[in-house]
Image (cartoon, helix red, strand yellow):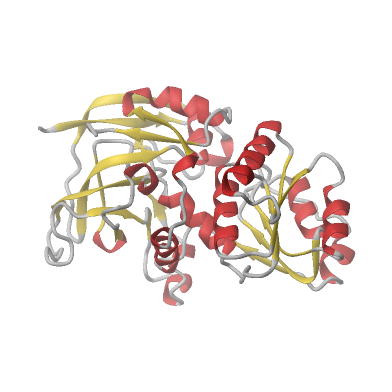
Length: 356
């Protein structure tokens, strides 16, 4: 076997399934994994639709895909086989870091100033094989279901967001209940927030939140709020002053402002959502932010590798995300998966490049 199939971005907004891609060879310090499953991300939707905001990041031609799990299949020169035996069930951090910038020297590797990302500007996991740095490989417990293991990358974003500040016994708001917002809900309730408010403006998202609450038996601990109807006043009144922590996932300017306004004085606002534009106006900045003494946090990716340890511990302790995978498809059905995910018809789509 000298060639593999994979989804390749050929130009902004243009991609195709190829069957003649060269199988990547691991270089020094790298490993090759046979991809068991790969998840479609919102970033993939933006890339495949030709979103101009992604044009400065992508580097076509490039194999897409940065959420995956698989098995170690080949070691490059210098990789210790005792530490990474062939066949190891694993995922990987897809940010390839420099190790030399100020962030890396401070061990904030997730914020590396010159990081390159597999599946965006380096070849990724929407193929039968993927190569990553050996130091980026994360071993997985054998009992972890493959569909869940395929979506650890976005779960890491959610864990990083929720656990940026302590939320146990605190009131929390999640602004935006898309796939990562839903993961944030699982994490926040699992680690013991006292009450959770879930906000969205989309009827399907709101219904999914209500279904989740019923499934989990969380009716006394979670309140769903339609953000089209005075959400700030409702939450400030319900909490007698505002939530302790607001998690902003939507990236919409209204969501960002709502998150700030519904947080109590001296509370925390954690921002993961990315606005489409280059600028966001903060309404009544002095009153809503400065005079309240808020702390604003920015979250990018996953802390390497503290977040991975945290989320694997949560999964070992029984946190369940399997219901979030609502579609499983062959890699050949990538276009259908991207379309359905982009329209919000699926919460998470997992693709299988190789026979299961």
